[in-house]
Image 1 (spheres, rainbow, N blue to C red):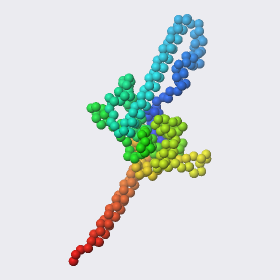
Image 2: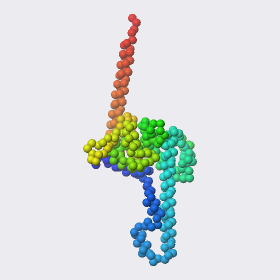
Image 3: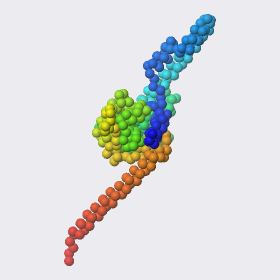
Length: 320
């Protein structure tokens, strides 16, 4: 197993623990049915029930009432957690709208327009929504006025594209792009399509599941980001069955760096870039190469300017 695979496995584990979309339990219809169906019992419970069939009706009635009370409590907990998840989603949509319109948002406004009757859960709802804004959208909810608790929505990285079609009102998806760039980097600067979806599944994005964030995730990643030159999507040579891989596109290489992407990736996972020694050293080398290229470019530009100035000066005639 390569050092990148080891690092990535550890990072995925941390993602599952830290990212709300990954760590929250998904409630299915089967779980609801199990909570509501009094016949949903284990075999050991059935054996115990048969053994106590000679017990008095009074004690049996107490047991039934106890079970009913317990299931009612569990179901009420399920309803509450489901409503809180919905509030997190509503707040994410509300914050995304504020980002699109470039408007500040206050805590009072969030409480009044989104949280409403769940005010005592405000801190938890706000925390999870902010994490989602960072991980999925690459947007930081930054407090600009601690007294009135006023926030601005700002992009974490300097990418010029935020996942929205030009002049279209939509939800930014910069975080997903950066996560993909991070996976490509950690996989040795090229990542199979299968690996990309494995990591995106951890944060709740699935290729065949339409959602309010990506719309069509597969189209967004394999078409939109490719057309924007952030990703290269190409067949893997001699793969059987035929499969595809992703690389950084020219626009990604121009607008960000391995170090910035590694820092963002580690922030999501709650770790430090130096924890990934080999990747950190590669990112440092990339920073040095970029600095040298910039210096060389500046030197050439200065030389050309000086040469032009000299030509102009020599072309000026002086009276005798």
